[in-house]
Image (cartoon, rainbow, N blue to C red; front, side):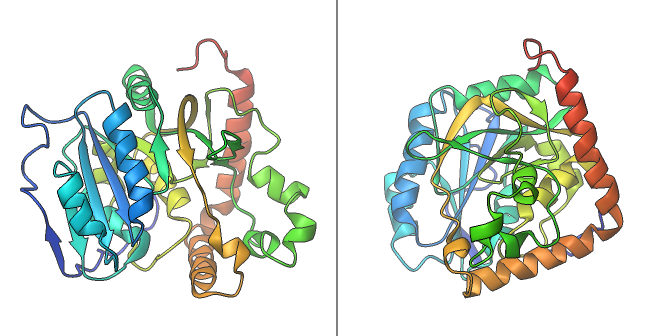
Length: 307
């Protein structure tokens, strides 16, 4: 098991609607979708519209607003009254996901970034995949950029110097090098279902019961490596992590810290990377070995039978 994270602080927050009632009024939804936002109304317009248009079933949508300075909260309450809004007084970063997870009613839960959007059939396909494969604990769909180009979204264990290798000026020499490409799994096929070490947090669907075991987010991590840590926690709780390209989700993926290597966000991400490496230092060798085992397992899988 991973080291236990401290209980998150509880900043002042308000909640729109009764957290005890499911959104459709006809019983518990299958899926609770948790979105975190900070002053990104335009992104939310697309994200929430994609849920309305493509969920294909009643869902519980929870928006955790990280102290937005625009009209995000007022707009969501007016335009999407079915969305449960948790308004925080300050921006606590990715730890805000825990505030949404606490209110999830569905037997499955989805983390969906505000700059992501569902496509037709994606959510039902992911639900069927988890229902048909009880050993799977968390799945990540195929992510694509706005123009439809593949976005590499499954990963092997991160090298210690990864943030330095992927930022200017060294990114000019190492971004397409073997170390970074191996971490990004650029050498693998991305059109087949396969077990992986972790998937990006832009869209993750997992079993809520495993999330209760996995525990809360670390409130000291504002940005970065929460996706890997969460996948490790879900695996430790008893569920396999699977890349599932039979469902597709659009993700704009800004990578702002790559373009601004000297910034508050970049420093926070470097701090998060250091904390992540320290947390898993004793397990590093085993997790690197597990990446190799998963590659071998994927090579032996029957592509027609997976999922």
